[in-house]
Image (cartoon, rainbow, N blue to C red; front, side, top):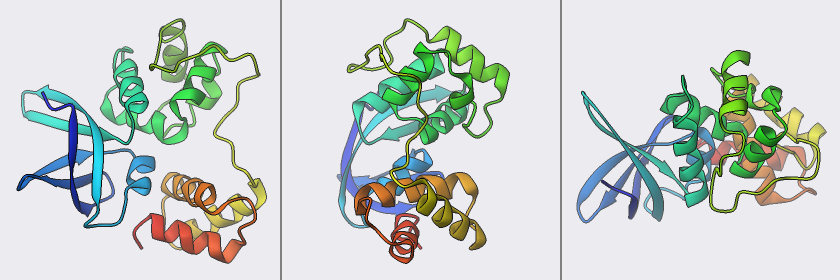
Length: 202
């Protein structure tokens, strides 16, 4: 089983990346957030891998840190949650935010994930309660929080601009969050839009 890949990032698509290691190219399925945070093409990248073997072969799922991989595996343990839904949850919630949502049974935050309806969100909140999602898991004392944007107004404007350019809403939100984190709170809207498009590889 492959647990980690270190190599050159050759391609980045909407759902997967191609990483070359020792002359072999590995196709790795990744979430939107992970894809947006990958380095430039031709750069070295390290991905933590979870391998899923089915009748039609083995698929690799990649993450930039171990906590995301461990949380992904925990999500797969929930009845009705497949790899696609697990990646969607991690697109809208970091492992820490998911731990908070589970601790407070905040199915609304979990249900923001693409393809995760209210019933599945509730099942995730119930079945993961009390379980350690990742090595740094903790019980939060604060109220549940969703993915927090440092500047909601400018973030919303940037997302709207990307949607107007034909970017899917979920991809737009992840790209803007990533760009906003890198640029800082003082970034102006035009610069944020450009940075978001760069994160999307456009």
